[in-house]
Image (cartoon, rainbow, N blue to C red; front, side, top):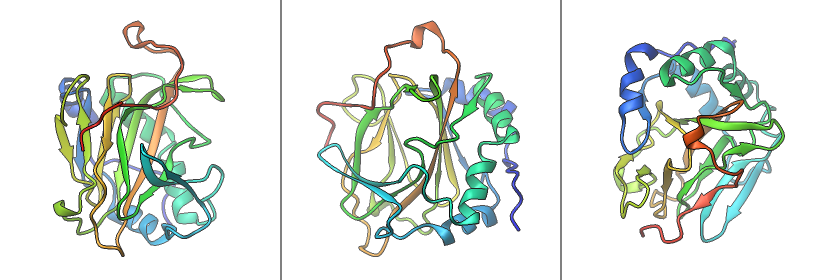
Length: 236
């Protein structure tokens, strides 16, 4: 049986300066952060695109699948990982890495959990929603874990990080298996994978998305509560 505790294989204190100083906004990219067996178990249980657990987004801004709230927990392997990512050891790792104290996980996984994109799918460049209306907390940190074995660059789907006012991506991150991206969320943290996925028809882009919150945020980051904000004219 899988352990309910995740032990990230990295020293957060040694990574803190790298995280804070990263451009175009605070982030870090970590390969091999988790035990392969834990992620392999999630991948084995990952629902197929046609499964009924998915909420389907299909519009000019996004074409993807997101797990429906309250579903996807039937398989113990998925539930174990999601709960462990919300437990104190993981929270302590993220707090030490980011310097953000008092992180709170989202027990509802609103907008998070499992994500999947099929051939032709995309997610235009955007800033995330900044407020959890049910928890009444500020969104501060994203943790994205990729589950794509043998993913080739020509398939596309790289996570792009954009600077505000930029005409193109400042950084591009290929979504390969056991690659984790942690970044601070704010109105300046623009990201997405805006070009249609060009993977084989039998492949999909799979990821786990986890969001963390605090009660309040720095004054310079404050803005009125808002939903996801997409760039009006992202690059194609």
